[in-house]
Amino acid sequence: MELEGTRIIAADRATVWAHLNSAETLKACIPGCEELTGSPEDGFEAVVKQKVGPVKATFKGAVTLQDVDAPNSYRIIGEGKGGVAGFAKGAANVALADVEDGTELTYHVDAKVGGKLAQLGSRIVGGFAKKMADQFFENFQGVVEGKDETA
Image (cartoon, rainbow, N blue to C red; front, side, top):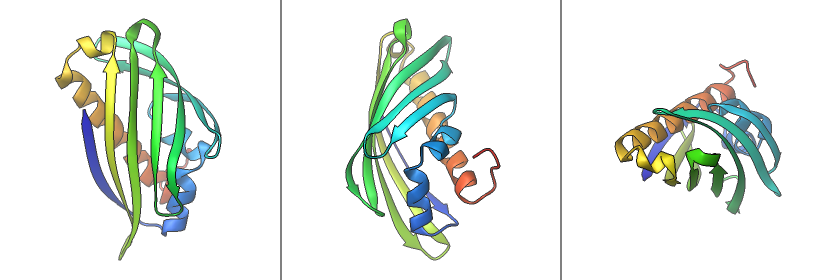
């Protein structure tokens, strides 16, 4: 399943880049994230609780950054295991560009699921993935622009 989108964030590219590499910001923005530790250099470990349709799961996973071209772009690769619920894994290309009102963040995500999650069907899983991506980037924009006090 593939997702893509663009957001204009009212901040300079260096600020947006710093937040994209901050464990604290990422934890605040990932829906259902209970724990996120690590660094951009060594990768991140995360614990995320989510409900997809009728399936509730706690995913434990790892995220690494590749093809880092600071402060322009990177590829973020992650995999999470949710026990009997199955697994989710994917990669996202994230790029930043200067625009008149701040920074344009463009993303292209390619994700796969297996186990019980895959049995839910692509409509449910695809809708959930789109909702998660939209929620993450909305949260991220709020944190970077200073509208969200949680981070």
